[in-house]
Structure formats: structure tokens, C-alpha cells
Amino acid sequence: QSVLTQPPSVSAAPGQKVTISCSGSSSNIGNNYVSWYQHLPGTAPKLLIYDNDKRPSGIPDRFSGSKSGTSATLGITGLQTGDEADYYCGTWDSSLNPGGVFGTGTKVTVL
Amino acid sequence: EVQLVESGGGLVQPGGSLRLSCAASGFTFSNYYMSWVRQAPGKGLEWVANIKQDASEKFYMDSVKGRFTISRDDASNSLYLQMNSLRAEDTAVYYCARDIFWRAAAEASYTYYYYIDVWGKGTTVTVSS
Image (cartoon, rainbow over all chains, first blue to last red; front, side, top):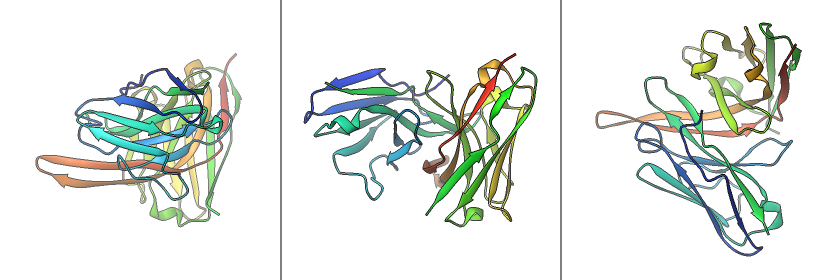
């Protein structure tokens, strides 16, 4: 059971903007850095954002990340049909049983 | 080219065992923490376990502790996941992954920097009678 909560789905028309929230606690998002991943069915997940707001090389600046307190947000502007995928936040949970954690996942639909 | 290739998945009966392997290439394997992540049918990504560069530190998710063992062989650039006492709920695609993982001292605790920058394409494990 995931300790990071995301909305099940978000949608928007091509060219529009969507934001995806990721809610956690002080043992994970509140004290550690957040990453975001894009996952298309049948493929390997792809890193979009790391260290809360940094983009790996090759990831367009249409993708952005931010963190405030125990929540994080992924923004996608200029939505494209190719952005239709599942998106997950991730971080380290430094509780009594430390380990990596992912969010519940959000399906992005381009209308 | 940086690459991770999983193998060893298949159909196994409940209570059975399976050993997954991951062959790494294109980078200095011994310099990185490595992880296993899984995705059950119709479900989200679930972190399973990871292992430090020298194997001196291993972390596991609660539901696999005592049943799964993560290991590595730096000489052959390989990561492994030994899975015992398998259950139907372990049915999933298992991904091998390269971690970026370090911590910085912060007041009374640590701040962890953790993300996965390279993923394999996965191997499917089905636990069923």
C-alpha cells in the first residue's frame, strides 16, 4: 500500500496544462527529495524530474516539478498526445522501515 | 549505451521459488545502488528492495522481508532477486533499476536524495496453481 497519494486521473485538451499532486508525510516528502516518472504500458518507466525540480537531459521544459512541505506537484504544459501515460511520484521513506516509495499513480488523458 | 536486461521470470506455483537476474552494461555497475521495482496487473509501481554498492546495506519492503533476498555480483555486473515462498500477490512485472541514492546530514536527522535514473524493460512473474 502506497504512502504517497496522487489523484487517479487528470485530463486536458492538447496545448493545455495539467498538474498532478503527490501527498505524503514528514518521513518521506517532508524531509527527502522527490522524483517523477512517466510510464507507458509495456515499456520501461522514464525519469522526468529528480531532486524536486530538476530535469534530466532530454526532458523538455514543458515538464516541471515543485515541492512544498509534505506535498509535491508535477506540471505539464503544452500537453501533447504523446504525454498520455501514467505518472508516478517517488521518494525515500526514512521511517522505522526505510525504503523507496512511489505514489499511487495518475493517468493523464489528452482529450 | 546504458542498459539493464532482466531475465528469470515465469510461472511458479504458490509457495515456490524463483531467481530473477539483471545484466547491466554501459556503466560502472559497482558504483551504484541497485533496486528491484514491480508492477502487479492493473496496479501501480511498487518499490521492492535495493542494495548498496558493496552489498553492506539492503532495504526491503515489508511484505517481502524474510522471503526475498537481493544480491549482486560486481565481477559479472549482475543483480539478483531470490524469491521464496511466493504468493499470488507477488504476480507482477519486475523491473531492475539503477539508483541514485545518498544522504546529507540535516540538523537532527538526514535528508535523502533518491531516484531511479535507469530502468530495465522488466520480466514477468506469475504465481498461480
